[in-house]
Length: 462
Image (spheres, rainbow, N blue to C red):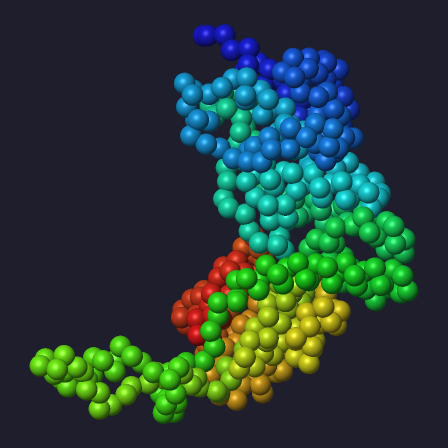
């Protein structure tokens, strides 16, 4: 059996140190000294092995390393071809990968400060960059990164396979961030403007703020509202670009076109008058002008969004509240918003302002969609001109009565769109009982990616 190449041995040392550190925070002296020798030998800063050093701090001291993290863990064809592999480059990559993974996944235990959360969020952003995404993409709320294969370990070699270590990077990052937020004394941080300014708004942080908003007052409440506002504005910017091409209202041909020059259909006018062309005079005589129809039907499309605001649907609540406000800003779209758990609340008066809407939500509790249906049904005046978007995991207390009323809406001509969840990652669990029945009636549950819901709504409104 051939001896492993020196580069393979070095790479394995770095990855075994990473695994040892992830599962046991205590230093393994032999692995630490061997890893230090490898890092120094390949010309990288020893600070890469310091668990307390953030990626930001390393890049600030060594700016040339910034670009090295971009796409660091995206596999290319060379990664699976032994003849094309650059052993020295793979050792260098192993050192950088180990740094960013250790900083993100070794979160320790105990209380967390605002500074520690801010540092972790920054390091998570570097990991997302290494996976070929933009910072924030995999944690939800600001878009979706492209699919990647986070292996970066040398294919069939004996090196630990990072693809097995991080099989579901997005949900794992979100869970880690949520745990850090829960371990932070958030109320104390919010009460200190200097500490609050260090917080970066994220879905996990917004969830905690929305859950705790009734217990905040004064400076803490003002800082909480500022963070929520910042997050809402950032997400709205992303969603607005997906909606901006939506057109509303079909051409209404029952109204004669206005006979003005700007509406003149020159091509049609020439075509219809070709029989009047005189070859001798080389002249076209026009006995009728044709104009384009520009008037659109003015009947408003009614969009009713019903959102489950129970604890498992926070991401959907935030995204759909913002999405509803964007559609409400389009001309001739009449948007209504209903949120529910075991009680339902009509948020339509505030639908144009997602910030104010979120402040009126009450996250948590059980799930009883029949109370939401009682609010939504009276809003349907013209079924064939109405779409009902129902966002939930559909784990309901009264499942049969709720489904019966949903089926009745569908039969009446309402376009009924069940959505499992509305997140940037597209993940979400749906009650199989509901999923099968929706499929049978011809209204399958949309998988949770928010872009699919935007496309569905644009099709209806176009």
